[in-house]
Image (cartoon, rainbow, N blue to C red; front, top):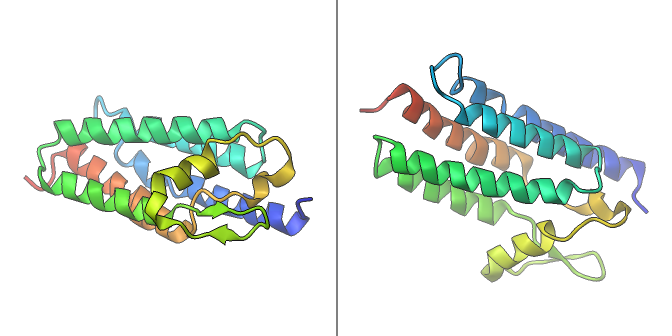
Length: 169
């Protein structure tokens, strides 16, 4: 059974990650004509994080969709940006930080199993299984909310701003 304090902790984590997407407004239309990537990131992220915050039964599907869309947008921006190879190197750094900050697989006893060798397997095991009961509150999208916001979300936002505003020529 999920306690009220666990629910509140999950709610706070997810709401903070949703609020952390606010800088993407800077890289979005109408500030930059034709810029839509930031709004897609904001919409996907806010819907996903708030669905998880409120324990929506299918929030795991949204996490998968959000991750796939973000990866596709990162690949697109890296293909179109003028700031190579720096953009690619920063994206690889963000990918590494995201992978290290991903949760580990819980064991049957509820303890975290630290198998860092299988990062993709861990992500699939912790994200791609549907929540069928109230255990959703024990799942984490990130081990550290601060690391996720500052080193993943904001770094990707910086790369989008560089792309949209043609900075760092």
